[in-house]
Length: 150
Image (cartoon, rainbow, N blue to C red):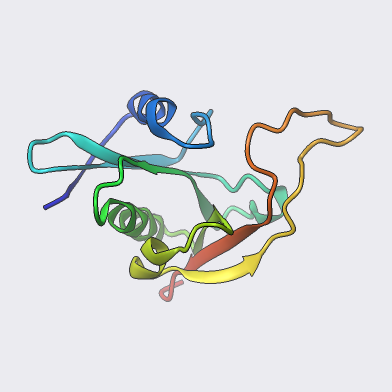
């Protein structure tokens, strides 16, 4: 039986640094949570913040910027569910996240999210603002959940 418990940004980032397959820790957040097993050991974390893409950052939308687990069954769906519920309790209208197109999204569907779009992928690097790609640049699925009470 998994339990949700509070976690600090520092603790969440350490978990992400230790276990995430393709992303590094985040710089900031609005909130986060951990999933723990019956012994109290953390088996996953979720980090929620402002949307990374400027066009989505309208003040009414949040983004799950990191979700990382050790593979414990149901940890992903439990964390996506708590991220969604907290966003709506705080008065946000929408929450989004992105997954690689190589990932199925079963945990998102189980937590009440819907597939919204497939992005073109690509690099954030451009002449006016050079960047080094630190994450996969393949197309991604954008998932969302909209608060029915807004």
